[in-house]
Length: 285
Ligand code: PAF
Image 1 (cartoon, protein in one colour):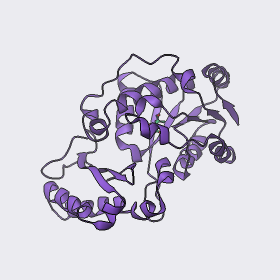
Image 2 (tube, helix red, strand yellow; image 1 turned 180 degrees about the vertical axis):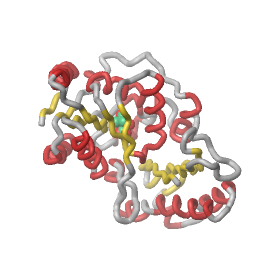
Image 3 (tube, protein in one colour; image 1 turned 45 degrees about the horizontal axis):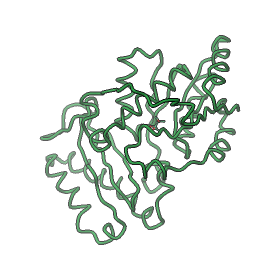
């Protein structure tokens, strides 16, 4: 497994591989790898000749400087996890390598980013769009693998790939969960043991809401039930566990479903703070 820190050595190596007819599967990450990332690498390796993983905590997608500072950075451990999985190349650039100067380009994803993550993290998807475009241009993958825990990110990247004619296939992959239902996330390592014990309530709330909608309860009533679930709970208050948003959205447009469940697929999406750690999750049905 090669570990490259510069764009030029990564491009030089991968260009030669592509000239030799090798296909490239790419998993972009911000490191602090867990079993969810590893499953993407395994899939990339199965479906392509080479698996490439990028590890870069991208500063331009963080709208909260404290969140950026606290984001776990575990490069050595990440590489130790990638090696036995057959990962061929790790691209781990510095911020200076990726951004010799701050990008002036702005990406606007329209209504895909006026809701949920885009609404609560202004500028986030601009940062994601730019870094992912740069990574695609550096790695030139045939297929790129993204976890569906970041459902809105997948929608934004798909739109970008389609509108900018990137020559690659986006492969959305199912969210991996711990046995108690908590969606795997690099941020989980920042949870205190008290917070970790409460974290599966996020998935419980999603399932409660799904059950209500499937039993014919209106979206407004469902939202009231979810608000009630999070309100007036002394245990939640002690752990500073509070919901930021809970949306029923149309799976394709991500626009909120206000009155009743649409005919197509519905996504229930949540963001919550738990002891100062921001977690997101969703279920689709
Ligand atoms: O999902 C992530 O880890 C990041 O948003 C990504 C796609 C690696 C871009 O920095």
